[in-house]
Image 1 (cartoon, rainbow, N blue to C red):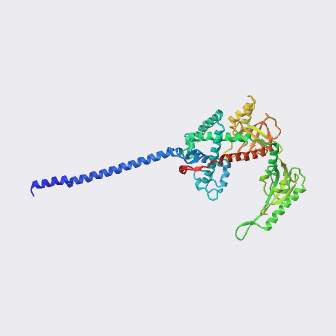
Image 2 (image 1 turned 60 degrees about the horizontal axis):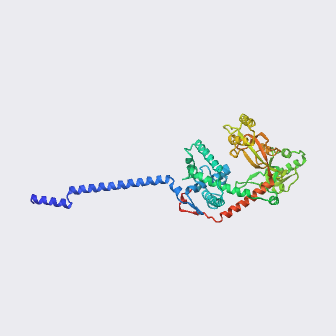
Image 3 (image 1 turned 90 degrees about the vertical axis):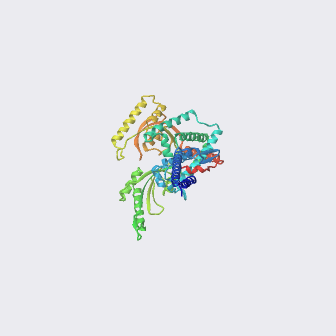
Length: 512
């Protein structure tokens, strides 16, 4: 083949793209292009993934989608989360450590509630329970909100100022707890999308609803005959009864199957001991019923003391029928429990038919500081007393009015239940407070009387600076009025809610 022919073939091959070098170059270029496309697509994928994560973390979906519709209003997942958390915290705060007895673990807040079975639901979790409660509460709030708007009911400048002050204090409080800001606090404890702005809006709505409901309730009026009839319908269940008792449990014996149970013989022995105590009691003449029963217990050879208590009729136990039959003061009897495996020696002391006026008082609590073992030492109590006396003298040396006392209570009192209300407790009933506090309320004071009294319970020890505001209405009327107004107010709310139905939306899946 001639040189010219070979040259022509090479030219033809190049033009046809068959030259080996060109083919190799083309293949390499294509591989690079494919790699670049894969890298570009991968980078775009990462960017999109990051964007989605940032978008979700921004809370946009939680705040700007519809999770629930009630009436003419859509509610976002964040709004549902806030109300859901409120239902949880309300129950947790109400029952405290006793919540565990209901099967509710509150240690992780609202997290994990979908994994805890709720004994109040046949086949459901605590998440189901709180979500049901949330929908009920939100429906009621929407119905009352619409009623308030129709009736021209709104929040006053004072109402809004109180909310401003509350949220200003909250901002400082959460920082003291280690949160960077109040938004971080709400997001952590109330769920995705919840921040201070949303919580403030929800608080305004809640305040409006409460104001509207309270206004309706306070406008209710009942005649003396209606109140008397309502109280009589309780048939003594709301009266209080004072008594002392001692319980003798029959000894349990191990059976063939290894279980422990009382036998006929041990039951008979327990009943014999109870009757011996009763017989000894009836022989004694001490006017102090508690001391008399304790002496009878000792005489029967038992090294123990009785228990003295005060209970309403509705909370009486095995001895309910006997006590509510109103035996004579000092009369005693023996009663067995339902299983017949134990016996009560019960001595009746007094019947309180609530024929007295409830009390309105203010107080400033100064708590003693417990040591590392939880013990309130004499020194700690003395320090608390000295501080209480210092505050008391400061008040007396000033204007010494109820208003100045209320201002000091708001500033200094350590009672979280009243230190935002000027230390005020209204409609206090006998036995409602610790013994010394209770005694001050019902020992015949007149408006303006003051004192310092000691108080101690399972949760605190300290001194109360007391201010007697005055008597309220008759306790029987107060109890009856509270029941009637509660029933009538709930009936009114039920009537308002009748036209509302919560409708679940697609984005409810983001809530809770």
